[in-house]
Image (cartoon, rainbow, N blue to C red; front, side, top):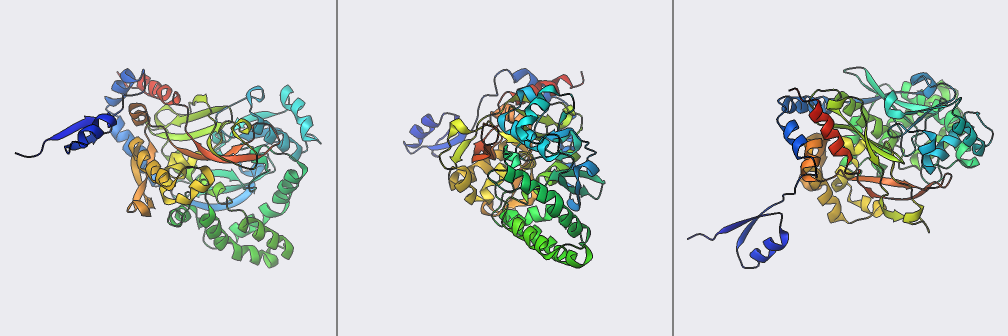
Length: 465
């Protein structure tokens, strides 16, 4: 007579006790669905459109290749006018804005000459008479951390050549006391003015002077094999970008009239900023996810974004509607004497990387990331495996060597999140809660759980009767 096998569901303590008696145990990892979602899950599960809709959304997302085609001021490519500001995350007003978002807006107002002193911008935004705030996502753009974009800032321009669709992102300033972390000191503004006067035009000349447009999706594919996860680790990606653009940057000494010092300063700045490529990874991910938008019946998440107060998601089958909840404070490692009380809740559009299947979803390909955000190497491997439970597909372009080149988990499914209770894992930087402080650490965070049942209810309401 064969040895009996006991199947256990969810009860690890019971399973361990049975296994201790030399009995074969088959463990089934089951969790009850999120409270109150049972009826909506049943409705969406029986939506006849869903399987084909999700197939179409995933196929469209995976079919995009992002190419770097230009660098230009936001006034030109986004149509921003004086007094118009873009920001990260879902819509928000000044009175609800967090410290780092306020700090970045204040610095942006000084950069644009709306005020002489950033501190004077408080009255400007409180009155609201000559300024407007709008999410980056509403203009096909993404912004890291505070994500503030002003008309004079230079933007990367990425294009999917098959459709002509474009997305945009500002240039990366580096780490520490920078505008995107809410800092606005004189050195922050000096750096931004140099980026507008020198770095932006030089990069424009390099991009326009390169015979073959840089394949940003291709760089993402390579950098994942080289220890990057494209959110908080972009070292290989930055160096590959520098490889592609530096010959044209040097050639601009003759063709563009740039000074040797300008080129040297730009090469030094990019080469010394390991996060520089992040601002290309983000719009590449948005370009792919935007292709999967507006598919009726699809339960795929197409954006996750935070403004420092709210965390919001958008879903393919519900159009441009935001489902929001309170942003959470990340858990991780802090700089210097900073601690949890100094950190602002999560902020930035950079979770678009996780939405596309990299960043926190690809931590197994970049185990060294735990030295920045906390945790351990086994944690990183387990995170990537766990994200497969809430996604619709694997990305064959973006594979994880240590997991036998399995594709990264891609296409967050609202129904799977609600059914399992597993939340998307994001690794992130942490901004100081007080305007002007800058970066205070980096860590791990998840969205507020309640936003997924909200999205599920909206999907259920759209199921044809």
